[in-house]
Length: 67
Image (cartoon, rainbow, N blue to C red; front, side):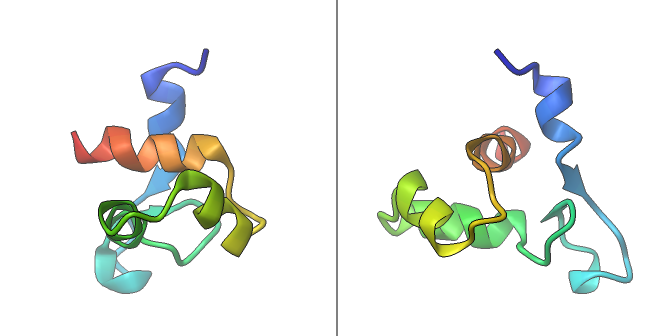
């Protein structure tokens, strides 16, 4: 099982990227965007199919970050 600390390392905040919003490292996908997809009934599988660079751990990291 992946530790919370390890998951949170997947999220970065850079004032020069996406106006400083938290993003999944190595992408321009904001945590807010992923959470919004989930809130509007997209499944993790659907999200992962849309962007092959994402992993299920990235989605878990977004959920953990939101807590």
